[in-house]
Amino acid sequence: AVLKWHKTGEKEMEAPRRLQFHHHELFSEYAKAVTETHGKGLVIDIVALDNIGAGEEIFLDYGEAWTKAYEEHVKRYQAPSDASTYRTADQWFHNKKLNPNPEFLKTIDELAKDPYPDNLQTICYYDSDAKIEKVDEETNTSYAVWDDFPSPPHECMRPCNILERYPDPEDEDRMLYTAEMMHFEGEEKYWFCNMRPGKHIARDVDYDGILIVDKAYTHDIFLEQAFRHEIGVPDDFFPREWLRSKVRRRAEQEPTRSDIGDEFRRKKTNVVISRKSPKEEL
Image 1 (cartoon, rainbow, N blue to C red):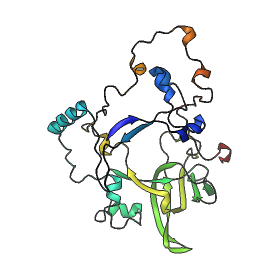
Image 2 (image 1 turned 180 degrees about the horizontal axis):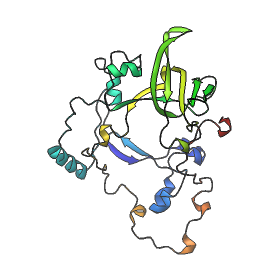
Image 3 (image 1 turned 90 degrees about the horizontal axis):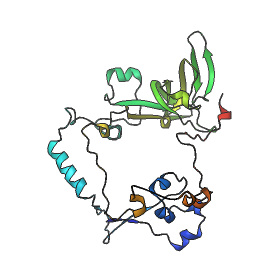
Image 4 (image 1 turned 135 degrees about the horizontal axis):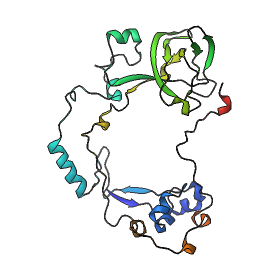
């Protein structure tokens, strides 16, 4: 297969520009102007050079520089000492030998006897607007009931400890959990994560509200010796305007907002959007 810029079809052209994914007018802009334009995009198609059969693997040429760098990486690569036993959270969770009962999540008492691998941890969905049943002022502990319906679902993922596992009174085949929801660094940046100080214990946490994930920076993609190299493209792939290192234009030639498209306005960056309204915060 080869990489090619998308060609907009007639039906796509009939759609409003905001509903189009490929904006070919960006090809005539300078690189800096392209990076500063919000709301527009470009599409790269992966085009097959021959018919593709069911289950057939598709190959893409990453370029000579990538190939040479990878071959050098293979020659000098030394695997970590624990490489033979390492599993990502996903690999471990779906391995019947390592995790024979994936439908049950372990409590902290069970983990003391049979712990998860060191690179894994338990996290829970739990927001600051959870339904608090009572607060023990003496121990500064909030007790809540975990409920994802009919209220908007929990969105904040945080570390948690499973304290108890028990059958759902309404469905004995379904397990519920009591969990201690942990604070984490930076939670105050997001109103739906920013819990009141102290301990938080939530009961009736659903199985789908708990995940086993890789601890931060323990995934093998973060290895210092992991292979990293940009994927190459043909020499004539990028527009010439983008490759100009020096741009000299008169002031009257500078594009105005209307030239670029007034309907495409840059949004604020580094803003986390929640499906909930801050007004719902308790």
